[in-house]
Amino acid sequence: MLLPVRFLPSSLINGLFLLVVWILIYIVWVPEVQASRRVDIYSVSQLVLDQSKAIRQQAAATALSSVIIRVAGNTQVLNNPQIKQALGQASSYLLQYSYESTSQTITLAGDVRPARRLLMQFSAAKIQDLFKTVQLAIWPDIRPEVLLWVVADKQGRTLLDGQAEEVMLFKEAAVERGLPLSIPLLDLTDRQELSVRRLWALDESTIRNASSRYDSEAVLAGRVIENASGLWRASFIFLHNDQHLYFNASGINQQQVSRKIIGRVADYLSSFDAMVVSKDGTTPLMTMTVDNISTFASYMKLLTYLEALPAVASVAVRRVDGESIMLDLGYHGTLKKLLYTLDASNVLESVNTQVLVEGTSVIYRWR
Image (tube, rainbow, N blue to C red; front, side, top):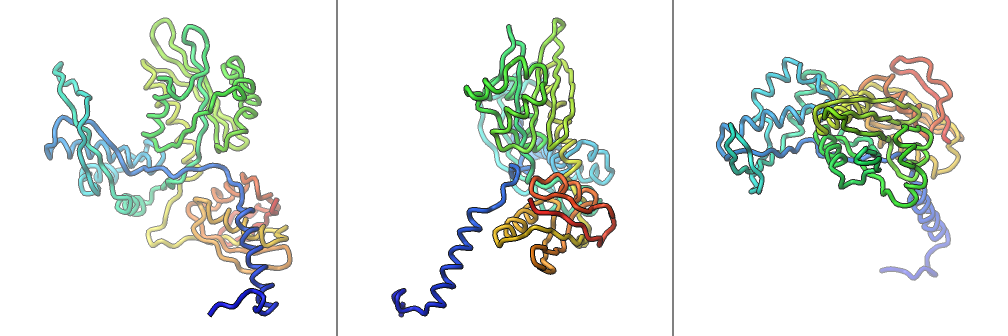
């Protein structure tokens, strides 16, 4: 039997009121973290001539190579002897496959033939077990979103939208490497904030300001041009946290250039986020103290933020003392990489992270 609110004890009413308040505070004060996106890195599609077993096995080997590059975040992984051996048994990593009809064709020795699309889904568990066995770093499938600005010289310098051929090729290259891309709106605000001239000049300050309205964690901005001899060249600036890098590439076509630039970005980002997972599943611990946790809202924001970090395997509260909280963080990869991630945060301020040994206690202040 439910009692009307007026008949409930005042202590219970007060308790329920406080519970509702804390729930609302938690909902409102979920921490603002930089945009990342979950990427499907285990699915690949490929055009094939027919549905024969031999063709499927050949396609599976090529597709598994692509998946392994996505998982590792770099192409050097294919040089590993055990990875090479796994590629010879690609079908054993295939979870499911299907075929689709297409209007596309494949040209073989001058003969144009109709093609079918082979859709392949590989086993994430088996591939991750392979990486654990070989002790190779895994780039988690929640990855930083990269905002892409492109200007091209096409009978005059032009800021390109998401439907431009050059941008589409960058998108395709990003899918190949498992890198989430976003394209600016290119509305009046964008065009006022970032002129073609400033983008062509790779003006870092202007590009950062124009990109600030978007929620992307990184920015890739640059120019592509075809010279008189038909060679394509690209020059880009890559912005990530407070870092800036310059990437240049050349090739015989636009696709080659876009793959090179996106490859540099994927190599860079995976070098920070990829982690080696121990064979037995255990993770090292770091003790962490965070000051200035003055409210329940900031307490929940901190826990939610830490649990969302790819490098963090577990979060356990050891002690709360006034406005300070001590936690044990289980982490993947190296302690140095974890500390770099924390130091790059916009919600934590480093107070003492000098001693880089397992079990050390580091101190941060909540902003």
